[in-house]
Image (cartoon, rainbow, N blue to C red; front, side, top):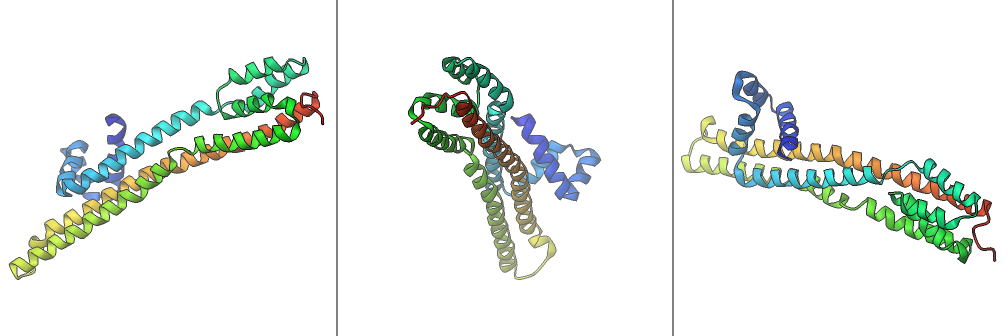
Length: 240
């Protein structure tokens, strides 16, 4: 996980902070640059932003792996089911669905189980179970959305506290000096940058996952229509 997170964080930071890029080019090293900016930004809020990044990426990776495992070729599944139904072997069609991963095969299996109860029952079963599968596909998206919102908010809170620290320094000294307030302002800006970098990285993953879910849902809807047509074509559904 560390090998995966560090390049992403480094890329975002180096693109948004020109000074960090210059330090890395001078031989400071990416890890050292990140470490120094992490310390300068105040570890309390920088640690919270980092936690958002780690947890958010963990959910994203889990979702991507899960969705890829659930992605199957619906046309191939339909051909296999049709081959079994042509021979009048509903049980073999069920076995085909049970041995195939993904929500489409699960929906087909539910429809075949209700085939002797009439077309209306089959369609309702497909719609209901499709909604359940859609909910499972969207599982975890709310947490990614939370981390996308939370990371910049924490960064902005660090910004506000950094500015308060800067003005407190001015009040205590009774004088305005660039060196006096530089530390607080630098901390304020760094927390903002890190919060935005985390939000940008997670937003990219979030959009990819949403597009993946939409593609699977569209395949589910198209395949379900074709499946019902097959049931009618081969007289699998009980007639009223």
